[in-house]
Image (cartoon, rainbow, N blue to C red):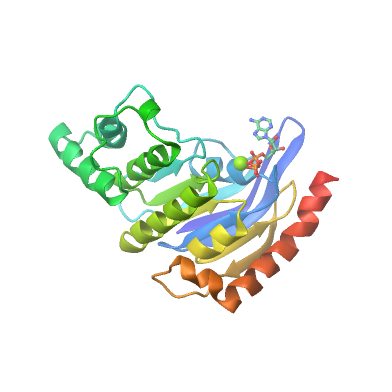
Length: 249
Ligand SMILES: Nc1ncnc2c1ncn2[C@@H]1O[C@H](COP(=O)(O)OP(=O)(O)OP(=O)(O)O)[C@@H](O)[C@H]1O
Ligand SMILES: [Mg+2]
């Protein structure tokens, strides 16, 4: 569905990314891990069409040109502080010209699914970080996009909340499969959520390894206790370690 061919990006003299080749199937959950500054966010921005590559080509095969292509979820919530929770979630639907009443119904359904029911009239400033991020998830899913682009969506949350949100995302994703590109620094998070982990090198980020994650679905946090989990975690860390050290040196 997504084909990345020879993508590179240079920022005024800094070779940030690539060349990268990737092929992603429809409905696949792909995690991207790599050292800081290797171009992960740059890759997502290119996929979102927010940034042009300096070289190469990214093509997306659409199933339905009538639905939005992608939604993005960022680390720092990215929801509008001046809009209520309901209006935030309805926002992509308003843009798509969906009648307000229908938009409210859909927004409510998604807020229920991510555990924010009852907070529709609240403003983001009055919500906890976890609630804001749930709202961001609801907004990303409600538009029914072909691709979800998530850039360290849980990195700003405390450890316990992160576990809760990971489980919520698993549940929602398993019920409403979408093609997902999910950037994270947490290897265990990548293993828990993804079908596949793309490990990137230090800048300029290239694909060091492309590892398939074999655990069956539906998945639960308990898979962390599976001996295979530790083995894969170690394998990814061994790949990353050298890159991180090189970058830090
Ligand atoms: N608009 C820009 N102008 C100049 N340099 C940029 C710009 N955006 C990114 N860069 C540089 O490109 C490189 C890759 O940045 P990017 O944000 O994609 O990395 P990242 O892998 O997402 O890092 P992190 O893990 O810290 O989020 C970095 O060296 C960054 O400083
Ligand atoms: Mg980044």
